[in-house]
Amino acid sequence: MRCPQCDQLGSRVLDSRPLRNSKAIRRRRECEHCGARYTTYEQIEIRLPAVVKHDGRRETFDRVKLRRGLELASTKLPIPRARLETICDEIENAIADLGVDEVTSRQIGESVMDHLRRLHPVAYVRFASVYRRFEDAGQFRDEVDRLGPI
Image (cartoon, rainbow, N blue to C red; front, top):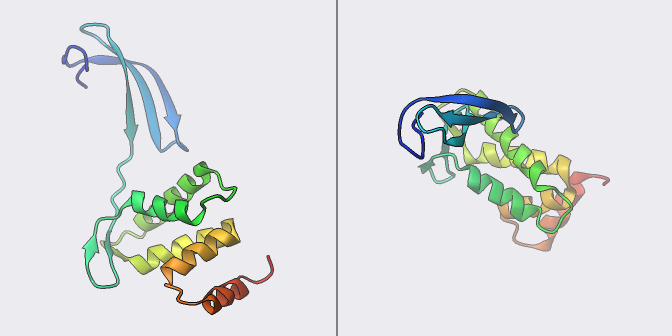
């Protein structure tokens, strides 16, 4: 690891701590050459499959897009951001665990809906309305009816 101050190789680790459910490690380091202290982060690189869109296009998996969809669905609801990050982690890990080269956007959408169904009914219906392209109030009513007693 090169020191950000003197650009020399060689440092010693002063402290290591796990972060975010032990998916990353924060390390406090000290340069052996100039004594500068700095922090590094180490995390597992997850290989995610390509996403096949409904029109056949292929895209790289985009966690930011996933999080944005969850945030939009849960706007002004009492849902902590940390919970949305956890859902992103769970979906991302489930996709990686499939061990395939491609996953459909439909599979991702259904996974998001499953998580939101358990999290908050309003967030679920909001997401479903965009994901399933609702065109009238009847479709909202049908989706709420499918949720059952709340």
